[in-house]
Image 1 (cartoon, rainbow, N blue to C red):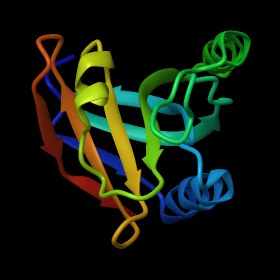
Image 2: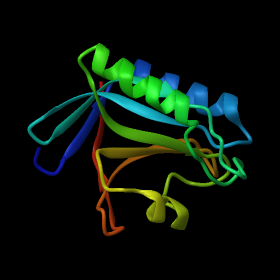
Image 3: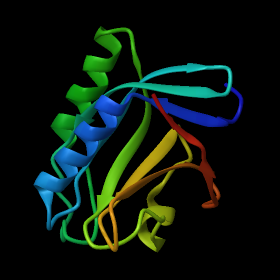
Amino acid sequence: MRNPSEVQMTDTLLRALFEGCREALPLEACGVLLGARENAIIAVTDIRFIPNVAADPRTAFAFEPRAWIEAAYAAQKSRREVVGFFHSHPSGPPLPSASDIRGCDGSGCHLIAGFGPCEAVRAYKASAEGSWTELPLSVR
C-alpha cells in the first residue's frame, strides 16, 4: 500500500472512541483500528479497546498481550485487517508525545484522542524512523 493520505471513519465509531476513552479517565485508553486499506485511504470499520497494562497508565499505554492477540485474530476471522492503533491523552492535546514517537513502529495509522484543554482527535502516520505526519480524518 502507498503511504496513506486519509483516514475515514463513521461518526458512530468516533463517538464510541471518545466514549470508551472518557470511561478510562484518568488513565490512557488504547486499542486497535480494524478496517481496510484501499489505495491511499484507510477505512476504519471497527475499533477494539485493549486493556492498558503500562506501568503508569496515567501517562503511557501498553497493550495487554492476550487481548492484543485476540483482537488481531478477530480481525483476521472477520476478513478485516488491523489498519492502525489509537490511544488517549487524558489531560493533554491529541499530539504525539515523546514516548508515542519512540514506541511507534511505523505501521498503519494512529489516532490520538486528547481531553485537554478540549476534546479532539487527530490521525497520524508515523515512520519507523520516528517522524509523525498528520493525516486528514474524514468523519461521515
